[in-house]
Each structure stands twice: as structure tokens, then as C-alpha cells.
Image 1: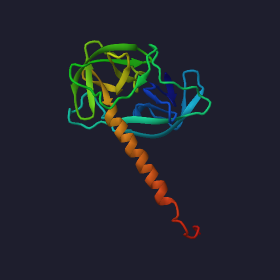
Image 2: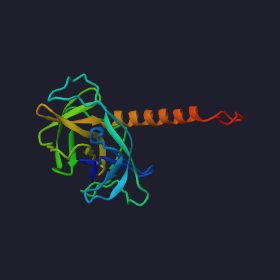
Image 3: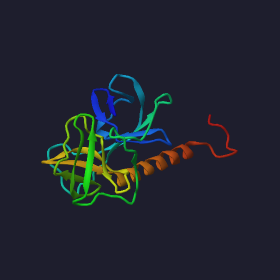
Image 4: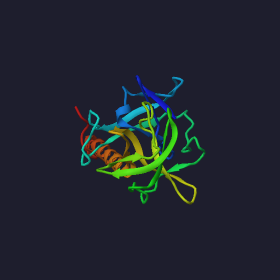
Length: 200
């Protein structure tokens, strides 16, 4: 799905149907409101991480975080189905591996498939057919399993040199969970202790 935030056009990577949360690349973030291609508000940016380096190259040991969580509006119909008709799921046992066959979906280029070129520090590069253009950022990178599933393993980040790159979904999921725990702890620490007098 195409999403727009201020002047940024990107691709929605994944929808957690249970929590009504959508995910895209952190560098797609805007001032808060998230719309679709027709200008309808579909949600609101809640939290993000983005340390994507500027420039055309990056060191393979650079730790890249690039994600944004979107609270989807109550009136928005949601699903976890790719345009191809396959349901997109997450399986922590399936992670990027060099040479693995993968596909990427972006709202500009559609679906393209190739292989994982290299696995780095929380991100990986792709080759042999995976293509991307501006607007495809945030799109899902997934494997098609023998049992007919599409399993997300990454979220499109950028192109480094000649290689399209994605942040690893398992690491992104871990960071999102840490962020939620941290936010919950902040709320809990801000709440008065039971029996404490109200703040003045």
C-alpha cells in the first residue's frame, strides 16, 4: 500500500492485524499524520528509529535501524495480504541468508525477486533481479516458502552502491518490542504510586 507523510511517498511493509499497527521505513516519517495515495488519513506515526547514513556507501559493520510504527485509524479496513494475494506473515525462524531467494514489493516497481547478496549488521543487500525506486522505501522483503506462505524477513531501506538493501525484520521486531517496553516503563514511572497524594 502506498502511504504519504508530508511530502514523502513510501510503501507500507507490514500490518500487525492484532494491534492495528502498520510499519514502514523510519526515513519515510513526517509530522505525524499518515495518508494514502488519495489523501485519506489512514493513521498516525507513533514512534520511529532512523540512523540511515547519508551518502552512497556504508560500512558492512554499520548497525542500521530504519523503521516507523503507525497506529492505523479505527475506520481503516486492514489486512495482511500482499497485492499478489498471499498473506504476509512473520516467522522468527526464517532470517536472511546469503544466496536465499527473496522478493520485494514497492508501490513504484511492484514485485521483483532475486537473491540475498550479503547479510550484515541488522541489514542485508540483494541482487540478481531485485529492483527499487524512490517510493519503494519501507516495502516488505519476503521469502516464499514451500508451504505457500510469504514470510517477511526485511523492510526496504536504500540502495548501497549497486545493491538494494533492507533492514532485517527480526532485528526491527526486537527494536520495536524494546521501544514498546521502554514507553510502557516510562508511563509506569510517571504514574503516582498507589496511595500517594495527587501531584500539586
